[in-house]
Image (tube, rainbow over all chains, first blue to last red; front, side):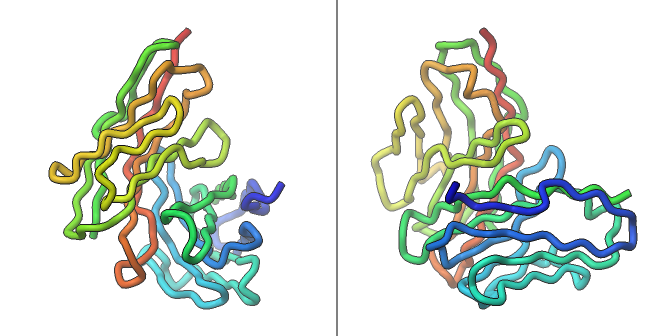
Length: 115
Length: 117
């Protein structure tokens, strides 16, 4: 399968713990995006990378959130000192530079539950 | 900031019938991209159809077509010959044209489509 993959698929943690999610984009895609989706809502943009550079961050991305894409391939999203309000589906997407018509290809998501 | 509005939280259609999902958006740009994504229960989001604003012709992909009304800022999705597998959440999304405006997709809240036999 050459689509976007995310691990883990599910994560249950206690409030105050740190969690880290991984996203592996489609191999030839230079752009990588993180979104958060809560129940009954559409995905909300968090941040975006082009290669290893983080070029855009939403104001939703508080200081407890950090994302990296060290070699321009996979990306990690870390949430420190988790809160119950962080419970959501975290979606990763990728897209090629200069190709297609702006569409993004989504992974299956990581569902986070903070107890 | 651009906003995307889907005014129908839920829609229902009988198998083989046609249904139209509504979407309106707000933007000051003249060129942009619009998308409809499908999210089946517990499965990943997939692209259904896309429209570039500079193209006057409405996009069509098999049983899926759009009615793009640029002046009205309306982008509805028509599903013909509905099938049970079409049951899902459908999200309308907007993307700005270039890096100055960002590459984030702005999504509506979604419409849950139920298909009955």
